[in-house]
Length: 158
Image (cartoon, rainbow, N blue to C red; front, side):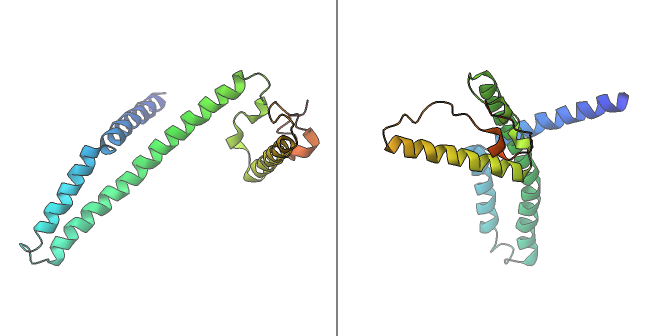
């Protein structure tokens, strides 16, 4: 139990630090600091005769920063993506006539997602064709279960 609590505390602390860093490093001020560092480094080139050590300083510094930023950006992207998915799930859940089978759709296999995507492309194409002939292109069309191709995991027929 103690191990689980410790892991949860560490995870929470990482999330807090990552959030603070991403907010701070995503500002124009952080860009300005990085620009000043690069300009200062470039201006010191003649002082160090553009030596290998002088070049190594900027190469090492930028490599370390890039390495750390990859993880920070991925963490931020994962949190943003999860929040967006949860918000969309809530919109689907509370919208009358929406297909609740669309909740948590990102958990389907790529093959099943492609089939659902093809189905919605077909629905959009039919709506556009209907609109060209004066039909109303709004509403919630029925999605026949046998045409959705997701082996019973996405049952949306009415």
